[in-house]
Length: 285
Ligand SMILES: N[C@@H](CCC(=O)N[C@@H](CS)C(=O)NCC(=O)O)C(=O)O
Image 1 (cartoon, helix red, strand yellow):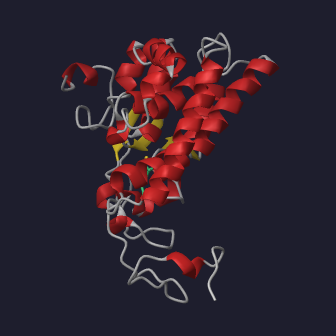
Image 2 (cartoon, rainbow, N blue to C red):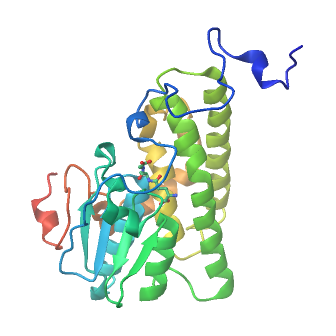
């Protein structure tokens, strides 16, 4: 007899899960064709290398933009050692599964960074780890005083933990999934709005997330939550994003910084690769 706690009790008609899942089950939808249930390289290919010590392998998505925002902010603040080459990794074509990329990030996701200023080079993966690494390396956008530093890391880790609910949960089921599932959309819309409210409440207490200083925590959160205000997943009306006044204030403050605007262009269609500051002059508007 089935019960509400029995997972077999409520499947759509015609669908009975196999006793043991296998990868040939149809899933469809955006990104389905590049997914596998295993990790590792699918093909041999070395990564390109430019002339700067920092080599970034990325794409202009919210996770990628966090890093290029920080690099542009570092350069704007006079840290010339933050010059970088940003190579575009086309995740739709499976470039994250090349042997070169996997050696830098065994998780096959952008962004990934190689720092050649140290021999042998240091690899850095996970966008939060890259932000922390660069902020520490250059002593910028990460306060040294314990309370502000910890608050920065709190909000950075909060973003890293909540991002998958926003993107992989809400964004996936609302915008990308090939069939719209009411239960999934309601579950993750609830969570997306709860997260927006957490952010809005915090930004009602201080100018920036960590207090009175602009930090890597703002950069990490801007591309995701600012992105929602800008219409990510075409969900601004659905989530009533205009309700979050403090988020809107912060978005206007941080999102219009020249370095932020530059960083958000890198590895997108308007500027597929970035090797020099002058590349922005040639970027499509
Ligand atoms: N937790 C990771 C997530 C990175 C991530 O999900 N990257 C996506 C693009 S935003 C990706 O590379 N997807 C390719 C794939 O799933 O194969 C981070 O913050 O760096």
